[in-house]
Amino acid sequence: MSDNTNDLQLASLRSRATAFVIDDLLVTAIIIIIFWDNIMAVSHDVNAMMLFMKTELVMPLIFLKFVYHALFTWYYGATVGKIVAKIKVIDSDTWGRVTPFSAIIRSLGRIFSEMFFYIGFLIGFFNDGRKTFHDFTGKTLVVNA
Image (cartoon, rainbow, N blue to C red; front, top):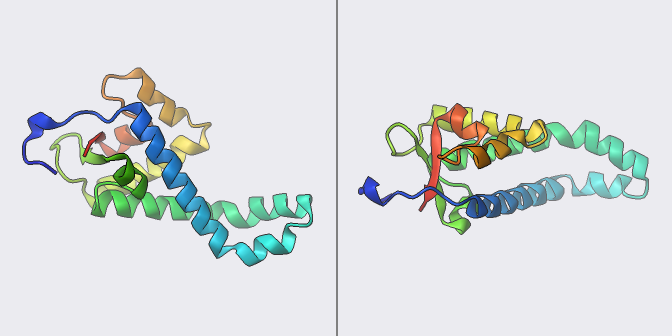
């Protein structure tokens, strides 16, 4: 991060959407790799696949998303998707690095943003800081890297 906070610019909604897609594809690929044998075992039966997804995949997927976003946001200030999109997450009060606690709260907020029809993401379209629900909960901003 540059020491000059005058150079900070909010990340565009397009770059945030790009990061979202990359991160979701990455997490999905990891889940598919981990559960490949189980997926193949039920792939012949649509009902069995739906039941497997509902009972066996949901919690690991939520847990992986939580850990992925919390760790990457805290340690790197960005997930892989954000790094590719050249954006980063900063503390909205200090404009510095996100604390571990803030990264955890933001990651939990992100889970809720997804669980409720992505409404938490839509909030970002309607405020000057382009802040989503999880940005509000984690007290963060997403800026150009």
